[in-house]
Image 1 (cartoon, rainbow, N blue to C red):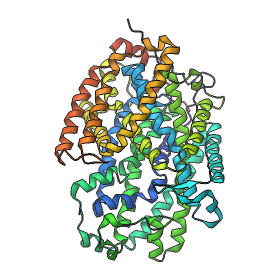
Image 2: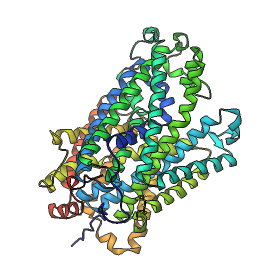
Image 3: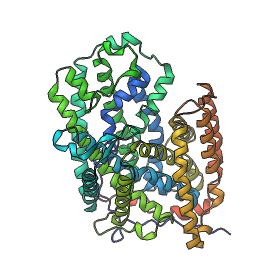
Image 4: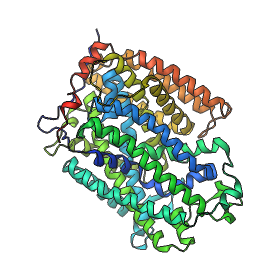
Length: 549
């Protein structure tokens, strides 16, 4: 008989355990801080290039789509508030093998985030003459600027600062992050209001509201970076195990964070569209340029005579990535804990320090981040593909897990209980599958490389620990192979990200939806027996018993 190894979840009252010290505001700002990073300065331009003025509706559409996913995770996380939830939660419903697979894919995306934000922050800083030594003069073949050797040293210091600020406990981290997030919110709001004062409908009259139709809106959501901006809400999920009153804090943070960012980005997009000079639209929205070294918002404000606000954009260009990198460091540490608890990483990485933080896991992530700085100093676009593709793929288990757990442990208290769950969960799974499809063939084929590496690491771990192999619950894992391969084939046949455009637009969306619904049923039916799931769930104290701060 296959032995089910229970996830090792450390109760919050043990020494050197995660501390429940994060309230609703702190956790909401973790979600917001993860969303409002380096992308906010270029997202209005990239979305407008794809959809024209219709980029305005891309943000609320993507926000509503991601809210369905956030609601699904809100029920599971409030019921099972564990550290590194994205990687650990599937273990309760589908066993250790699924937890390892999802945790590894998520970690591949997460571990690249802080280095990417660091490089973005330094790139903006290098626009000032005093810091031009951060990058070499020659750009890479991909168009990225290459960090100089002193620039790599500066980046290493920034990465170490992220780890140091996280080392003294989640309470200090959330205070620092909340202060940074207030500034990251206030500056874009001021910029958006300034742009709205110059709003004109002339750009819309010049090209029409949706020159590229609905296909342009969908491209804005994906290749325009709209959906991936919202994926920052996941950081709140990873710190769920450290939330006070998780039954309230977690749903408020996940949904509230997305709503705040939807409003912020939509208003900023409206201001950007309305302030564009129609004279530059002769070749269409797709021909808009970056607007100079400091980006499109700074260029637009300078052209409008708002030079002081243009300098404020540069300040936000440093604060935004710094705050996002700080949040990424915190959540990546928790995710590494989940991967260690599932058995892929050494168990020692799951130990928390006396300050209640996974210091060993964060040091591992710091080392990997430093290696990435050296390996990808000339080509960060590849890391961006891994980051976005891996993270959205790792979210596919949430909708499946929440339905499976309803069947496996119906008696378990659910402090936050979703209405119409069977419908909402299927919608959320379709949303995740569509976003994966929209990322395109080129991203998916690149993502196959780290997935293959993960398989190699797992084989090595099983050879060293045969008991791990007997605990993988392969019957619950096998459906993930056809799911990934099926999406890989669909992206090859589709029109996004280098696909062959075999599937007509519209037909492809229907095919992906039907495929996702079929694999959803397979995934739910592949869940662990109820007794095994109940035994695993019993290792986590019920949330309502852990509300003290």
